[in-house]
Amino acid sequence: MNLKRGIHINILWDFDGTLFDTYPALVEGFIKLSQQDLDRTEVLKWLKKDSLTAFKHYGISLELRAEYQKLHNYYSKTHSVPFEHLVDVLSAVDNNIIVTHRDKESTIYLLERYDLAKYFKEIVSVEEQGFTRKPHHSSYEYVLKSHHIDLVVGDRDLDLIPARHLNIKTVAFQNRNIEADFHIDNYADFISEVLTHFHKKPL
Image 1 (cartoon, rainbow, N blue to C red):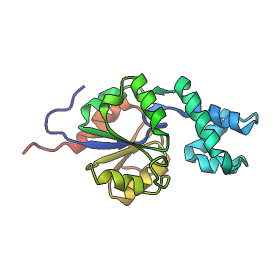
Image 2: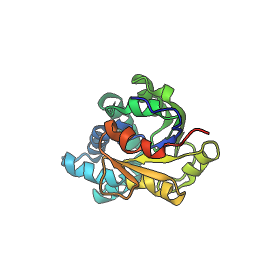
Image 3: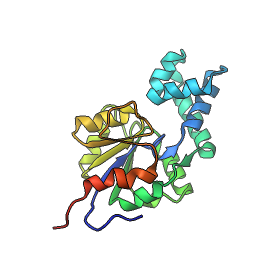
């Protein structure tokens, strides 16, 4: 499934819930941290908004965020897998960049485990590299200093808000409830429904 010559595109990706299905790990880590018998579906709904909102909703101290990150990273190494048909998309794109709240070590671990690291030009770990958490746009501006970005893909609004601020086209993955230029539920449809819109005739 290859694009014809003449289609050139650079994509900035979120990681958790966008490239990898890490939500089972997020939920397990959150419940372990809470020390409560929480409903997994309900926890997922809050984490889909963002972890800070989930912490406040369940009355968990924000001082435990570092511990939550450790638990999340631990569970993600055993619970997380890349979404189906992702390789078809990554291999059709000129440059893929990751901007994630996840630490770089665990990001690289998962990419290498599934032989995906070779598809990515750069990985930006937002907090680890001193940027303000998304939806602040500082990490995206950092990427734009080195790479032209045509498209941003994420599963939460906080991934797409900075893109809209910077006038970059957006794709919402498995989330029809947020504003985006494209909405995709399966990467099998990404090339036909998204990338073909970026067709540029060769000079």
